[in-house]
Length: 337
Ligand code: UDP
Ligand code: MG
Image (cartoon, rainbow, N blue to C red; front, side, top):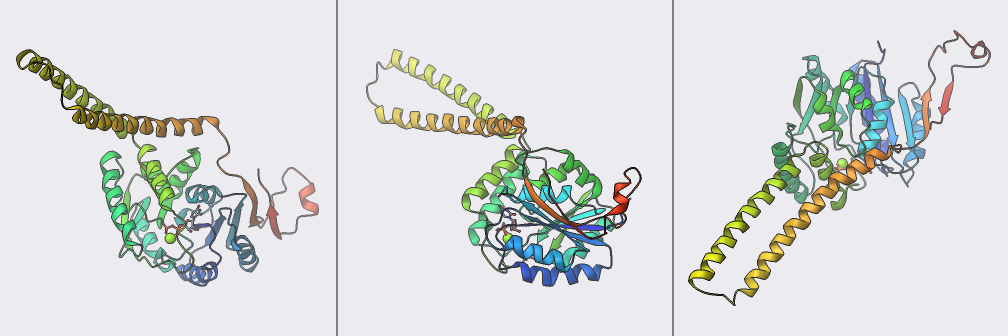
């Protein structure tokens, strides 16, 4: 069907310091694979020189490079979504722009796909991130494993390969807040994992603050499972039962021992605890409602300012005779939406 065998999708947000190093390693690594490939960079509204650097790179390798430029920052997962929509390859590999995923390991993913897997995740051999990310990540991994049916050893690693069928399925979803590896996993027939290298960020710093990491984990839990809500209603039932029993105890105590006047602060502690639980429940409900709200508005998920890509080698001139006159198979810079 498609002549391109591999599309590599790379989200880019304020990566000016590291992009050149990425190009220097990525292109030779892909050339070595000896397959037809394309690299799709999605600039996620960088405020530094990233977009300009990507434009330059497109001029240097227009044959294998495609650049999608967002008009603002929509987040890593939306950037990957846009990359998917512009990809043509029979397989798609996603990669971070900061060289934390060694591009030389791409062949490991592809070799695993050759064994018949349509989704190949990855496990970082030795993770090189700050210690608190290790700890938090492990905890969230465990929690996710319990409440969603998604089995990923290392959810944080974006270095993954997907078959065209899965990409098409993901493209057909119009999810607003999503977590691509999990979404793709839910469509996979025969997923697998391989161990890949992981390096320290080559340049610049992590684009994820604690806040956005927490948001991302909410996306992962609430977009893929109703278990948090169900657990919460069960907790509510348990607490009601407990309170009921306590009430009966107090009535009997009153009849046998008489009225009690003390224990005011115990009452406070109990109240605060219960109010805390109630607030948490409202917040949790809010997470779902917020998601529904964003989803039903049907706003565009991202706006594309421009797409830099080479035009098709042979423009079809079936119907419009115009095409025959002035379309040099040259570089094409097109806008969209
Ligand atoms: N990224 C993005 N948009 C964002 C944040 C990050 O496109 O809003 C890109 C970033 O340029 C990088 C990848 O997503 O290519 C992973 O980001 P980062 O390395 O900061 O995350 P970490 O490795 O710390 O999890
Ligand atoms: Mg990184």
